[in-house]
Image 1 (tube, rainbow, N blue to C red):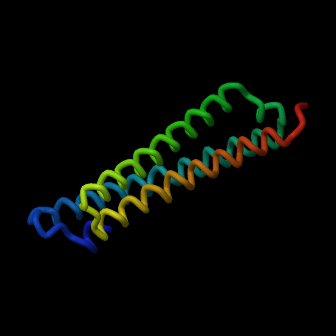
Image 2 (cartoon, rainbow, N blue to C red):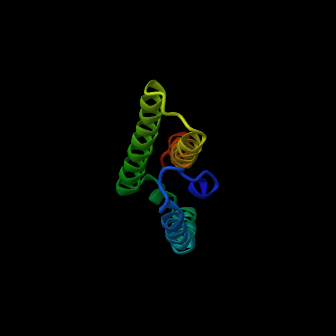
Length: 125
């Protein structure tokens, strides 16, 4: 949507490509996000019924992997921002895209970090 609101004046074919990219992204979200919410709800229910599942090794490993990926995306985003800043290539379009990536990755990172802190705060059963 940022590409549509701030089109690249150099790329004349970007309008059609942007429309396809938006369609693909929205359709992916329509399918994947409800699945994610449902699976999160199922896992939450399972943990509420059996508190020992909260300490599952595989659950913690996957949470740490998610944190690693989220931190990597945030670091890459900031590195790209600094690189473009030093090259004098900052545009409103680029800044909005970098901000969007940072908000999504930061939100995911914060959510799972909070979840780990809840694990650490609870006494072991």
